[in-house]
Length: 214
Ligand code: DC
Image (cartoon, rainbow, N blue to C red; front, top):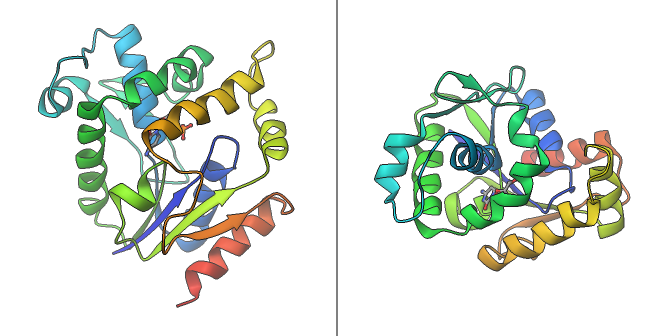
């Protein structure tokens, strides 16, 4: 099985680019941030307790599932489809607080590896903050997708509900997250792709070319 690991800060385009790369290669697509968002939603709205819980208890009580099909993406907790809800600002603002708990990260790492290895797919594009360094350091290709802060803020503003502070959503969350995992600087062996000057299609092409290269 081929694992393509893609990290990057908020607004770098890593989710849409990773999904397009997966479609192009006929691979599965796994958005690992969705699990942190769904867990945050479940703590805020569904009575999930993560403080003072073990990774095993979180696994037992969370009820999380996600599609690995880039053509049919969905996220569920139990029977509830949360594909839309996990993108709400209330979730985005609280997620770093739970993502920083060691028991949450331990659960996420085990769950992510299991999902990928049990998928039976020829390949999976996995994207998220610590995927190239902590979760899949053995991936066939490890990529850090970046863009200038100005470009990232511009891209995110198109996705956010009106009245939301873009700087709060992007810059502050990246600062909080990078205290836990430093994803802003490429680790050894990780390829840097800077999309500041690239449009969407050129970014996808650059990554496919990188994957094809030995
Ligand atoms: O990629 P995203 O913005 O949807 O991720 C949501 C949050 O989850 C983000 O604030 C950081 C956290 N996260 C993480 O800590 N590790 C991952 N592999 C993916 C996401």
